[in-house]
Length: 269
Length: 269
Image (cartoon, rainbow over all chains, first blue to last red; front, side):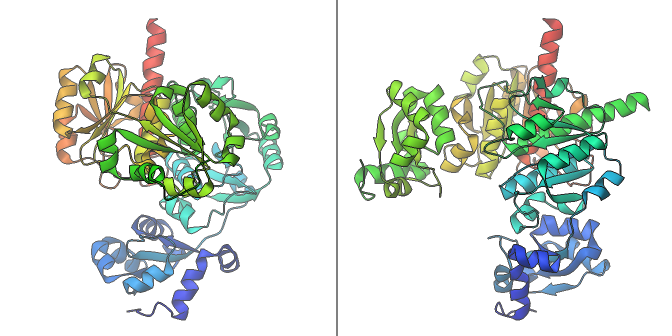
């Protein structure tokens, strides 16, 4: 059992809290049972090491068993070692080091996507992670993230995805206007989700391939981005709320797309 | 200008971080421009005092002007005083003390609600606040909160509602099974939002008056609660995600209800 919170191994894991280390090593930190379970389930070959306290090994026996069966190297470690490795205040005794690489725009396009979300200038890690989870749940084909956004490999984003970072391709660092142009060239319509939109989400043309373009959580989309998109679409506010937050608006947009595309596929099928 | 962070006034405001003080005084703390703006806009008579730093008074001049016009007592205070009053690490220089009272179940029923959400055993303040905001945005008539849930008046919940705590009636401390029975007696159907549901949300009967019954963010609904409801309804997961979080699932359910009820009203109208 690992018991020295000042060992080189612990320092090496803890250093993944720094973006520069993640970029250099191509490795990320997955904290907590939900993320670790999903990594073991769907990307076991990417999991380099799994660390667990004895208590967590009992509590999450199914995760540990699955990890061992899939050849993941499982290490027992003390509570102090886990705490020293982690960014989260309560990693619940379970943390994994995994390789992770973004997809390229070209790879995503090659798979002829029907539903995408393009996050521009998103700054809050929890929001970014939650939108990735929503995109995964709604069956989106991939997530695009612009430059000047929060780093998708940061531990807080990874936690908020609840495993979805391993479930669908994610491209990062994309220049906003150029990417909207490239999507158009590929026949993918770009819908700006914006409170100024004259079309309501339930009336929008969501049948064909399209990308939802989402703005920054505080100031939304830039005028240039709004202008570059094929149209602006609004999630209706029926009560007195001023707005929905980014994660909620993305969830409504993506689920509406999923409903329309799937009922259309059934009707045609 | 208030400059003494150890004054009785500051201590009195800061004491609203404690549930016991909020219950005794019937007052809550509203931190940050979004919540303060909504309180001033829609419930100015409830705002007892508004505190602002000189910088925030400049930056949020429209809020301060509106507050003064509506007779709210505005105090300038130093950064240290604001920090000593607040629970949030970054209240952005603006905080208000407001009266707030929950609605009773009877008051909510008297208004013949068509769309409700009943949160059972919700523990995370951010989740609770976000669901209240989603309910408000989707035009729900009220929010019901069970006993053994996080206190809706806690500063973190109030912040997460982004003002919606002032927008629609909220009843608290409701016993789960008894409340489901009372809703049924009033002709309001109860739909358990649950991954085990055999009916998909898009196929559900959402035309009539109904309440979405949501479970705890980690363990969901108890078997007794599931059994007591009129049916269990599932938000489909089209990708590989294990689930949606409570706030996202509530948003999808509430917006689907809003769409169905409003298109039905249009068709009949």
